[in-house]
Length: 550
Image (tube, rainbow, N blue to C red; front, side, top):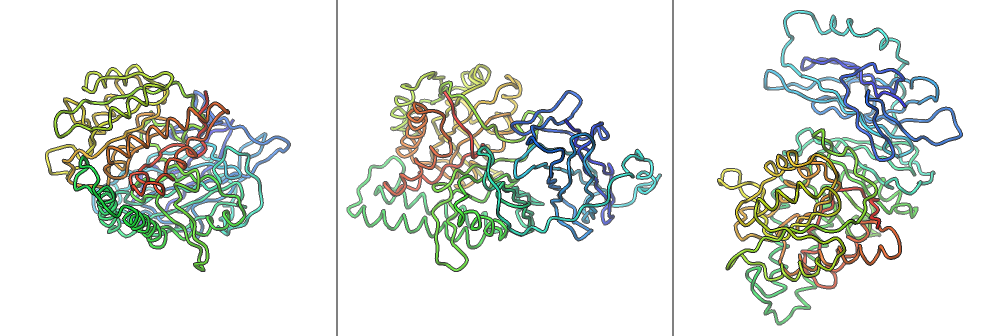
């Protein structure tokens, strides 16, 4: 049991270099640090992190990743450094010399975030706020303020050598740790551009890290590709709208074309937008047969990791879509006190609470009833009406198991007068901010899993972005996981996907616990049977090794 300590100034002047010292200490030295536990760990009332460590030794290697948006490393080291945790005393301190980047405003709030690992296993995190100012404030200097800090910090051990980041294999995985755990943070999550990646694995000798840059134009390109996939899916059915029946006379040729188009999209994603560090670790683990689960934690949900198709550097080996070949899950960094800091690793299947608004006329979804009929056969099934009052009651009553929405979703321009992201109830269009306020007011306890099977509303002004808008917001409300589409879904395939997903869970539970991500893998593979890109559209926020139990 140790207190994550982050010794750093509360305020920094842009262009100035400061030192951030981090350790695990027996006493609480920086009460301003907010501590969150990972599965298998816990936080005491006074902010100490209780961790289960391997037995048989008096010391353990600890990797500490520092994320500090708006700062550059000034000491020539790496963003991940190793220290030693001793059974009977404080760990050694690791020190990071950081230089605050110039800002255009008078001040800009930020955070120092430390993520703590042992042998590739995430133990927990700590963070503390920092305010970057454009000019030197009047009064006591920053140096004087620093000198007034508790002297115990000045006795910290010398800086530990930075991790080299080389890919060295040779360890074993206890089973519940992701084989590849990547944390990716952008300086500007909405605008992309510069970012950093740190990768952990129980099979690596240490973390691998790098900086990279994603062209901001990628977002517009993705929206265009999503539109193309949607239209190809409609063409496969010979339809010009989502409700029109298929009339194609050469469905097999069209299916082959859709398949190749989707695979080409995945190839381009890997070639042009995946950081090199990820590519290096991916192939090192895959070639050794040690890659089964991938966890992506990022403050930008834009890159569709599920659709990436890796190719070896020499071009001789191609892999399939990551979402089909591996237990893949995403997560968003903690943004509210209610959010789980790291995705839960187990959840009981206590049933499905479904919301299915009954739309009129052209907005009706013909296969919605087929989907609900299938869900109604599941143990623990409950149905709620599709108006706002009923949805509010559901959120207040259901705190475990699955909450399933079957209806319309839409994505709009910010200046349209409609919510940018919304699910359409009978009487209201519910946006993520309103939903989050509703969840906070309703219970604040429990960690239900949300599945938003949101089909095209016919009113969307944009195609991409639905899961980007809803995924992080649902997690901020304390959810244990979330599944949603990256682009508007077709009614028929969306119903088939969800029934295959829940059916796969219930069938698998007859033989014991099942990996939720493996169920998703199986359902996604129906893309090759049907040629419908809807099967590729789903994103899973949660734990790549999440086990569903009876």
